[in-house]
Image 1 (tube, rainbow, N blue to C red):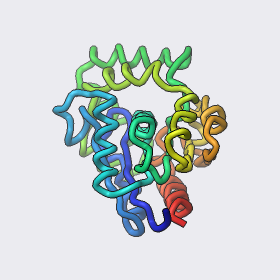
Image 2: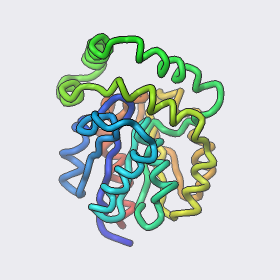
Image 3: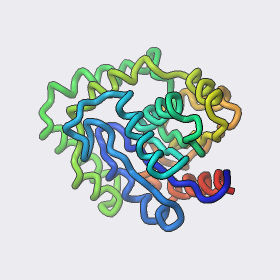
Length: 242
């Protein structure tokens, strides 16, 4: 299959489709792009979180567009893996895992389990103030403004990570390779030590996977280095469509 593939973008933890505002102008100049809100997030805030339903949301977006390059960040990357495992056959042109190449089993998950347990004890208003201040300190307003304006999905965080933790390791890449020959780009911030832990194992488990690092960026690489992140996705989509 040749020609420019459509692109589906899946946001990360506690965020919404507004996360992709820095990427949209450039990508939409060349590709058909759809952003999705996961259950419990953004426009779907009233829907209860469910990983299977989240994968179905992605599948519905792909069905509207045709076989696509699916890009997921963090929580969205694990949703992308679940989509590819359940629905990837015939629907997937390429897969981009951004900040989502760590196994969600084992001792490294302890901090996430702690956060998932702590968040419900803190008011959403307090969490919002903290996140707004953090983001404003780290990123310029033209990058982070749409995310702050859209707000956060703190009520869904515990359920989302509660379901993801314990579910994924490199074996999921072998499952995906058995269902689809679509290539995989593991796209991580160079400084994202936590989510880079399994990148080599994930890449080795899939015959058409490669790793690319965004220099000097951490976990939220699409904010920290928006041009470099966008360029990596664009180059991958061009390769897929060649």
